Image (cartoon, rainbow, N blue to C red; front, side, top):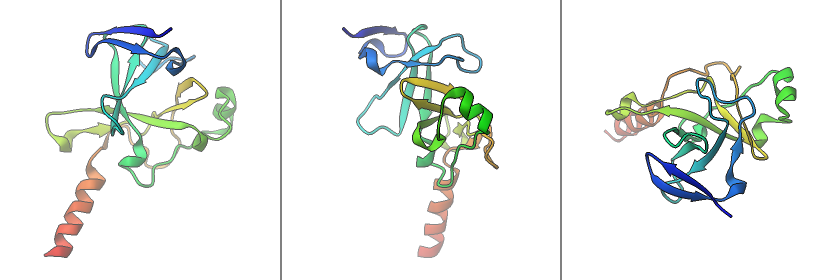
Length: 153
């Protein structure tokens, strides 16, 4: 039997019960504790972390390694143990995205990534150096394009 979300953003959605992600400690600033990842296309760059409890709550997320080559999640030992995460690298990792009218204004929250393992999700405080709260999402891609243009000229 599937779960039904009457999403204010996407209309009626049917999702598999096993795709539900339980956030035992919630997400910063939100009351919902059960979410599902929704892809609007095949092999998406961006997904939606949609609440199963609140039909109007859907957060855009992405895998940060698609945009930030050196991205890593560093957790202190106590936090890793408390959350039951043996190794943060063995989990799926997403960051929330703040969209804008201009691509250059899109940002990603590298400071508070979301790690998901075994149907449980946790928003953690990333201890890695340079984990910015509002990292320009297309900054590295723009720099690479500029370098390629400069070399070609």
